[in-house]
Length: 198
Image: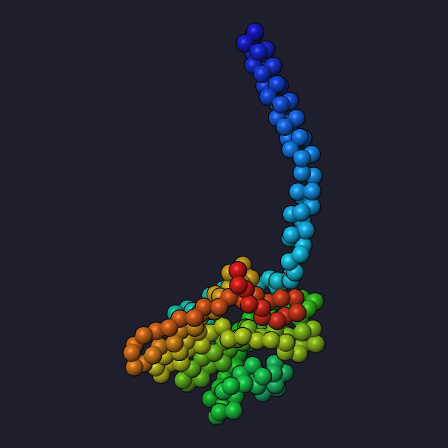
């Protein structure tokens, strides 16, 4: 019993000593907490639109998910402003192009984010397209591309924790060397793609 009392006294003494030490450390630098808050608040914070985790790869997405049963109609293509999204190639012969609305990834007060694809005989594309609340196109980005003839150029992507990781592969046909470029983006509250350098 005597040992138990001594142990309790020792623990109480340690507790009191720790409390006094903690309080004295706080008094030495009372501005420490506010300094940390000031450093954090000086960096502009932009809200990130939440997106589900997804993969846009050749094997699964490119082979099985790039098309739906029903292609978009001419009025849906116009409503989604596809000639703005598909601008670089839109002037070519588009008779075999079929556009598909694959999925709605986000719908909120700011607007919506759609996954749209284009399939044709020689190549496939998929884009994330961001529309405001009035269905006006705000921004878009290619998240998948594969040209079947030579496969010299392709783009694959993944979404993880609302970050969009886009990998572009370019094969030099003469040397056989493949170059890879990776960029990371997120979509801010203005529904714009913003580069993530972290």
